[in-house]
Image (cartoon, rainbow, N blue to C red; front, side, top):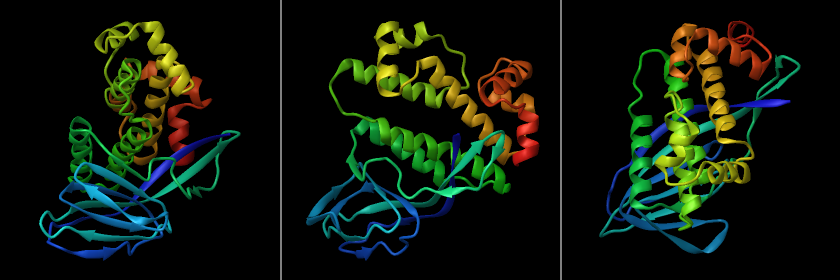
Length: 270
């Protein structure tokens, strides 16, 4: 049985940098991401009696039910972007989609400070989530699903280790996750990040469990399924957006991966 994970946007809002504000996490029945854009302060939470010092470039994940008290600095007030969403796994068994199952907790860090380069990337993702203003709710949901999936995957895999192999692996993995629509050869990817093809393949097998090519196919397949379910885009447009050479190749690979044609997949499940 396979699962397809869906994230549904509930609410986005920003806590402005007002000196010395205090607040609690009021909406606790959802998953939340708190991105610290600027400033500093203290967070009090149930896992530790000692307050956690918070500063710009940090990202928090709060699972449903998690309690949090926030206090902003007076001299350097916090500015926080808060993203609230629901998460569901949709089981797929014997060519049928089953009832969605709520995800109780995502396997991502509760708290992590990021480097300047990583923070720039994270800020760009949150800015993109904030700028979604399309008139078609299905298109907005498809884009939200895509950006948030990338963001969560980044949180799972980001490692500040100085190991050059790990750094090359993370960079190559992020490239596949963000540029999957572009043609790429494994040799070119390895050369770009100064690692051998064999070592890159070993890193993927160790940390992801599959080869780089299989991981790229997985990303393309999940994006294709999301677009089929949440948009009315024609097959050619989906093929282009997901990195397939043409509509025929897209249909052929989709049937190999899912044991069903993309047209039938859309008809049965949309």
